[in-house]
Amino acid sequence: MEHIDVALTTVRLFQRVAKVLEPPPKLTVSEWADQYRVLSKGLSAESGQWNTDRMPYQREIMDAISDMNVSKVVVMSSSQVGKTEIVLNVIGYYITEDPATILIVQPNKKPMAEDFSKHRFAYMIRDTPALKGKISEKKSGDGDNTVFSKDFPGGFIAFAGANTPSDLAGRPVRVVLLDEVDRYPASAGDEGDPVELATTRASNFWNRRILMVSSPTLKGSSKIYDNFMEGTQEEWEWQCPACGVYQPYEFRQLDFKTMKMRCVYCDWYFSRQEVVAAPHKWVAQNPDSDIRSFHMNALASPFASWEKLVDEFQKAWKLFKTRHSVEKLKTFINTKLGLPFDDTEYQASGRRDVDEESLLARREEYPAQLPDGVLVLTGAVDVQGDRLEYEIRGWGKNNESWGIKKDIIWENPGLDQAWETLVGIMEQTMYFQNGCGLNIAGICVDTGGDHTNRVYQFIRDMQRLGKKFYGIKGYAGVPGIPLVHKQTEVKVRNNGGDVIDTTHIYILGVDSGKDDIQTWLDVKEPGACYCHFPSDKDAGYDRMYFRGLLSEVKAEEFNKKNGTIKTRWKKKEGVQRNEPLDLFNYNHAALKLINPNFDVLEKKLSLGINYMQRNMSGGQTRKYGQIRKGVEL
Image (cartoon, rainbow, N blue to C red):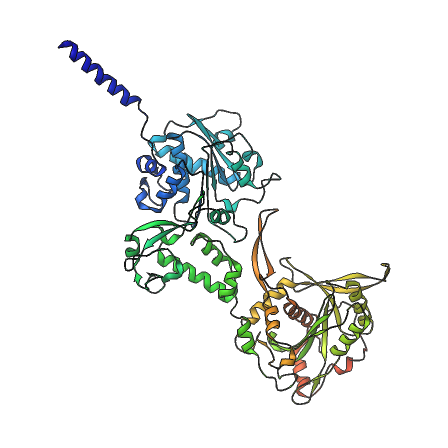
């Protein structure tokens, strides 16, 4: 009997020992967070014990990171959805549950990586009991060593900046966490793409984990968007209470007056409470990818007010429509909807109110060659390899303008005949309905294309004859310079390439001029800044003209060399010809070079005086390059 009692006691002892020595049950990242994570007061929207049910869309994301079949997870999201907390939960999980070497990369070392280490990470360690005592700071003469590198049993965590190559090319790591990747520079010093440098450090681990999170920036240069598209492209979708179909949170489906969400399938509207209470799930658009990628926007966040989102959007849209300011709208698209900003898309939908059809419909019948209101005429010439394209434009007060004639001289600009034809056209007298005539006051000729030296020769000859032809060269992509920027001297060469003379041309800030034209085209009523176009089919203002006039859009592009974002004008995709836009711009420059006194010209024309007639044969001229100050012509 005593023998049996001893045996039973021994069995129970071994059971207790086995239970003590038994490894803890394998947790997922979300389970670890729900069991152990404590949110720090002042650093989180809500402090205290973590609860994934508060933001249920986070569960699948976090669990994908601890899935042995997944090595890379991409999160493209808005702000206010807890993506930084996801990163912290992953760090906590790998410190306690699956010790590993960890690298977390911020856009820069100071202040971002330093701040993350000192505050977000340090406060999590302080306030989460499961992590206390796990981190042992290294002792070193280098004070940064304790801020940017932490040891724990079984691994370490390094805090790096994407702008610091030495941070990204160190010892191998199994877990790479890339935070706000769209804010990374294009190159870490001279070493190349920081994303590539960081992820390469994990390439030798069969159980590596790579997590990329960021709000996107510009479509075409967004790292997070490109990686999202390579992955499963999962959207957080709600089930319509009426028809039962799942669909993502779409801002365009939100009724701004009632703050209700419309179902795209049955057209019923639901309150936020009804949408939140409905079943949800992640739905993949590209399920066969071995990369898990997720997108979510602020509409799904419990911390984002739908009313505030609408108010923010409406303010951004108003600036977009009235001032053509795109910055606040871009910020809203990136940080609230979690989507890359596509400038060409928004140009089509809102930045410019006109299109080919509306401009074609705007055309009007002029009672004569020159309609009333025209007070001065300008000409513009674009030089191509096999032709000269030109436009004659009339101008009135307050930048109101009239297209008069757009045509092509199909003659080789390398031969004298093309230029003789041009002079004949530009010296013609044009007439108002009352019989009063008017000649062109100034013509801008582009020197930056083909036949540059031949154009220089022509401009020199015209200036010597006192004719108002101005050589111009456009500078694009140079911010801050005015349309008429400066005068410069250029060398005229003979056919052998020897310098035989000089002449003067003007440098144009063409981007500034295009900004003005874009604004003018949006004006809908005749008057200040309105653009008139003739309906006469021989005038040249057909569909191809308007397509060329609208051929470019102002867009932002990512400079891969230095990691900066630059705004510039570029051709729309699929559009080849932009001569009409250039000609309008050159006409505008001619007007600025002439700088007329419109009140004086209006009085002369009212008396039937062609104030340009006396200058047609040359006569007294001013010093080349000297700009008139309010001339009376």
